Image (cartoon, rainbow over all chains, first blue to last red; front, side, top):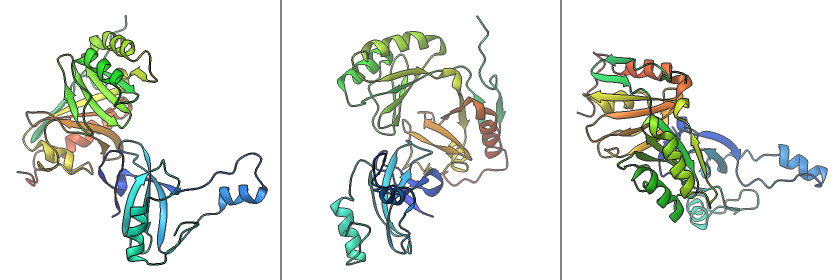
Length: 109
Length: 189
């Protein structure tokens, strides 16, 4: 079972206490944006076999959204970090690089 | 004025541990910047307690204060004192961005006392309830079976469980089954 540490309340929460909230680091394209940008914002999602960045919510707990970096193939969790970030923290990127040298995900590597 | 009643009118069950509804409790949700001096002063004035540390419940002479999330507290006082406590909190937080809401009648509270109280909760909640991980004064928001709940441990090894009033019967039934005689596991003893 997936266990993620909530960066807000410090609990090692297991999957049943959490809710998956889709992909992390989406950039919103709202009114005034081009149709292509709006379409990709709404519908286009990463579905990798390997390193992935997700948003989770500590639903049965403090109720906060946070981000998690994990491998969809091995279920290895590289770390969790607060949602108020535009890109993954360097220490989490380093951890991923240690396991998967040369990884990339969207614009991050 | 109408006659206020708690969700299950003080129902109780005696298994290997005792489950009882504690009746009317005053509960106030406070949201705001927990680290601010205004919050510390307001909570102190209203309850006598200081702002609790993360996942803790603090006790004062007028009530208890529990850590619900990085920006939320639950203040627990006597049911009749809610108006005074609200006034004190609102006074103290008047100059800052904060919320004080009376949720007393939206909640139900149960006490689990007796033997193997940890076991009653450990069977129905995904929380590490070993004595190393969870002790008196610890507070945890989690779930009980399929519904949201929060609980804390008292000095006498009893637990108090807070849930929404609408699921009070469900939570009582789950705790009743979990504490039935013959269901002792003895994992924590």
